[in-house]
Every structure is written in structure tokens, then in C-alpha cells.
Image 1 (cartoon, rainbow, N blue to C red):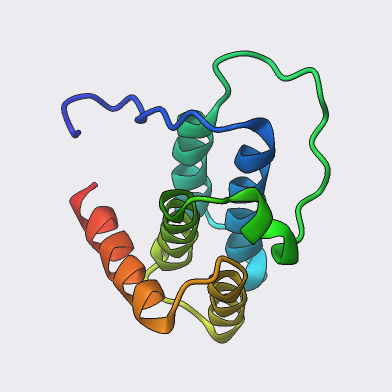
Image 2: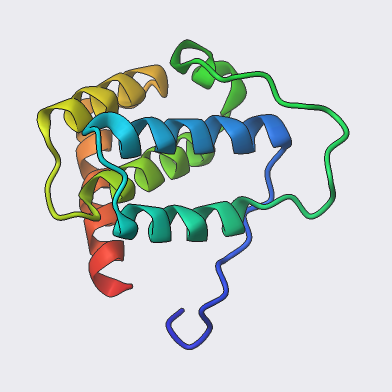
Length: 130
């Protein structure tokens, strides 16, 4: 919503939050650069995923191979991939290293090539709209 710049809240557990954020950061750093536009976009994602209450447990590092167990629902997996795709496309190009991370992420999230492609299209549309 352009009228309200506050990010939409996406309440998830701390473990799911960390899985999504670590996936997104893997894409952001894949090309060896972490640009202002990527930082700005990720700041919004972090705000949307911010816990409503502090978590007493420290999250364990997330591995791509664990994502399917952590992000159980299709909606969570699609959200994670779409946000990662937004980060990869925000600078206008997806280089070979970012593509490899996105491909690994889609496999870890058990998304078909068609689902991943559709989510990438919607990610670009969201970037253009915002």
C-alpha cells in the first residue's frame, strides 16, 4: 500500500523468520555486492518479519537443506522465495551467482521450475509497483 509506508506484518516463529532472512541474505550477497537498494528492500522485509514479542531462544543457523522442514506451508515457502527473488532483482540484474543461489533455494523449498518462475515474475511486478 503506497499510502501507508509501514510494512505489512508477517507473523512467523523466530525459526521461520531466521530461515527466511538467511535465505534472502544468501541471495543478496551472492554477487559479492550488497547495494543500497538491496539494503533498503531487506530493511522493509526485516520490519515486516519483526517479532511482535521477543523470543527467549536464540535461533540456530539455518541451512538450505533444512528449509523444507522449517517452512512447512506452501505460503511460507512461496513468501521466502518471492522475497529472495525481489532482493536478487532489485538492482535490475540477476547474475550467475545469484541465479545459482535462487536455484538452490527453489530446490530446498521444493518449488518446481514453473512455480519459481511465476514467483520471480510476481517479485518483479512488486518491485515495479513499489
